[in-house]
Image (cartoon, rainbow, N blue to C red; front, side, top):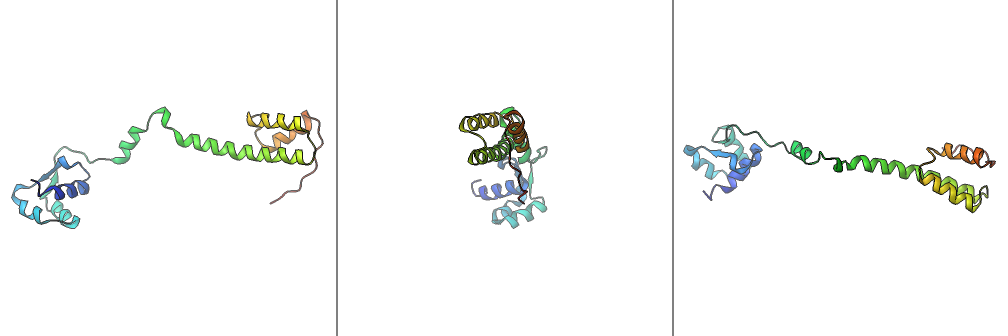
Length: 148
């Protein structure tokens, strides 16, 4: 029946099943035809005039979504977190290397070398970079005041 198309759609949404899984009670078709709002359809569902076909489970949209995204190539969240951490770390290191060059503690060749090393992940933290500059490159670093 074409006249029951809207009622079938509303009932399917309320029952959380597909439109083809909705069953109307043949004796109550006139009541169903008069029902035009969600509230009316919900009342008819309570009265068992509209029901889902037996043996049908409701759709769990989150589970379905998870099934679609289980592959190895779909783990985008972890990549974003890793990239954000890398960006935060590399910006600190580059800022510190620029400070050293600005204070004329290191020359341009050393500056380029430190940038390459920091980009490749040689230094875990800023302190690690400072230790490298002090011990390996034999540079004297000025004392820093804690800025908070």
